[in-house]
Image 1 (cartoon, rainbow, N blue to C red):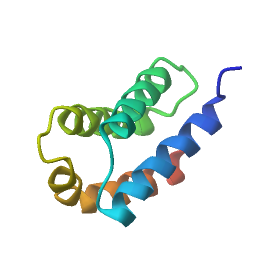
Image 2: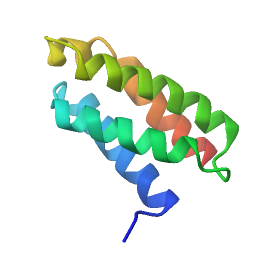
Image 3: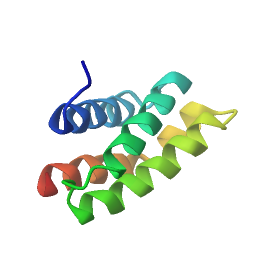
Image 4: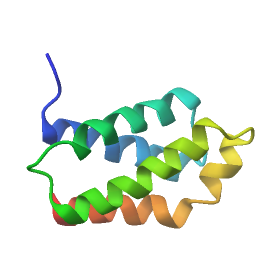
Length: 92
């Protein structure tokens, strides 16, 4: 059974919050972010402001997947991580 839009947004926020709190993560989490973003981007019900944030998260996940120093990548995006979670809460 596929996840609904709100479930996808909640999972997205959970992963981002964990990265922000723990200052670490895994390649598989970045791949999951990528899949969630792709799925949400094609959803016509998603607010345009959220789609802008999703584009930024997609870029973050791509760089994370290709990073040789994933924890450093996550640490360098601490401000963005909390802002993205806040933005998704505001617009969803």
